[in-house]
Image 1 (cartoon, rainbow, N blue to C red):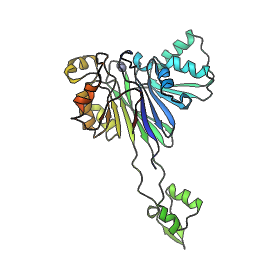
Image 2 (tube, protein in one colour; image 1 turned 30 degrees about the vertical axis):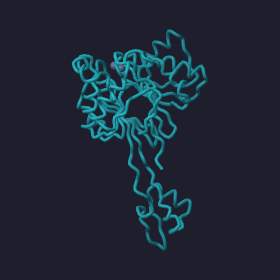
Image 3 (cartoon, rainbow, N blue to C red; image 1 turned 90 degrees about the vertical axis):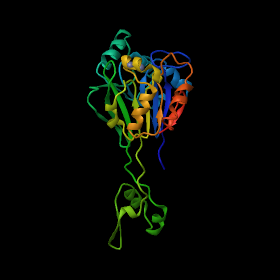
Image 4 (cartoon, helix red, strand yellow; image 1 turned 45 degrees about the vertical axis):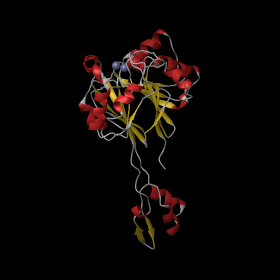
Length: 304
Ligand SMILES: [Zn+2]
Ligand SMILES: [Zn+2]
């Protein structure tokens, strides 16, 4: 059976908190391991509001160092320590992340109860980060006003499910079941029984891509193509295409064009400009172009 793979949005506004919305933050849950992507102000308040177990977050990924994507970090990290966290916390982000965090913690004379591991990346250089044997994250460059990267969270299925009939037919032992799941054949009366005859077809590996913030950029397509689910910023509706270009953001229509060109059926909207109080317009205007369009709302959970 497929493992849990879902995304909870905690912040969907751009720039600053308004209309009850907050700056960028989301939680990817893969098989009960939590990964935070971006950490705008209010992220820790949102974690409490939606009862997310923050002790299960061991990796935080920061797309870029604009405040609406990282100003929640000092508060969140400090709270982890006040609550006696012991597990290492890995924070991945562009060069400058260390300077930002260490500067804050130095003036506050902060001391932590756990190891804080800050990993900096060249945003121009696609990098693969192994989380564990089931999950890895690919970074890729995005075009924005400062160095910015996108993330593709990828599932890695390295086991097979066994056909229940095969267990009976071949009277498989527990040890044999374990080795068949990992890809090995068995032997009966000196003859090999091919592993493919004992297992179900391998499940499709799912992936979730995150693109915020970015100007309309077809160069993203190869990095996100065939993702099961995409979050692409839709800061503006289509009438503000010029403003989007000037501020290096995307419109709803541009984001949908990217999704379609990347062969993606399901896309979540977000990073809304503060000028939009009513978000229903994003769904109304986009759904005819992409039937799998999902309106990004805080507290909502989206299955990958
Ligand atoms: Zn932003
Ligand atoms: Zn930005």
